[in-house]
Length: 166
Picture (cartoon, helix red, strand yellow):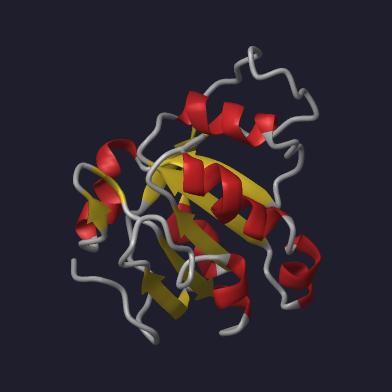
């Protein structure tokens, strides 16, 4: 599958693994990983899929994730149902990352793109890891898709860039 372009349908058979958010904020408390059927979910919602090279890594933690958490109200005002943050990390690490950042609801979902399977399928990787990119999907159609060329930049994949295209 080539990289996704604006106007294309989000592909079928894309799934991630995640642990549903809970009010429990203790990162030492683990839930049970579940399948998140992105293809099915994205057909009926407006979703921003945000990929980062790794949970808790400097740019991801200091600026990329905060750009979405700080713009939650603006994203909701644009009709966004969910922000799905994916990384190469497993579902346990992604869940802990969400808890460490105070996320207790399902507006921002932290999921694993295990082995960067999806990211590899669209050609957006950083070595073996997921690259830094954002894809906005509105009821199954891609309305924005861009990858940052510099792994330390969020110029294309941060919330401000995506909001400007919604």
